[in-house]
Image (cartoon, rainbow, N blue to C red; front, side, top):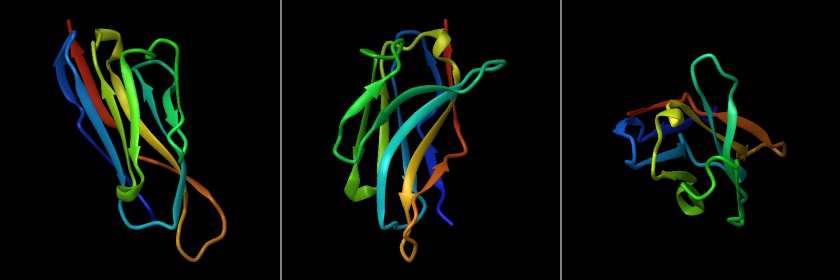
Length: 121
């Protein structure tokens, strides 16, 4: 069983920055797309950004220009650099990855447990 382990969340003042990380719990055969989503209290989970194995990134409109997604394929890790944070960015942030594990030919989607980001005004 593969888990995605997130880190880097916390409390920050408006205008500040945080860097989230997400890594697989063990070695895997391959990882396709990776992404970050977030869910604020009382709201549905929404897409933040995704990145392909080749490094092509897409962003949700409200985060574009402030957030940067990147990945290190050698470390099975995806990052989310968040700058100019606003109180409305407060949410639980989840990473997501399409993974193929050793010994299996199918791809499966995995989610992290979430990391809390709180932006104070």
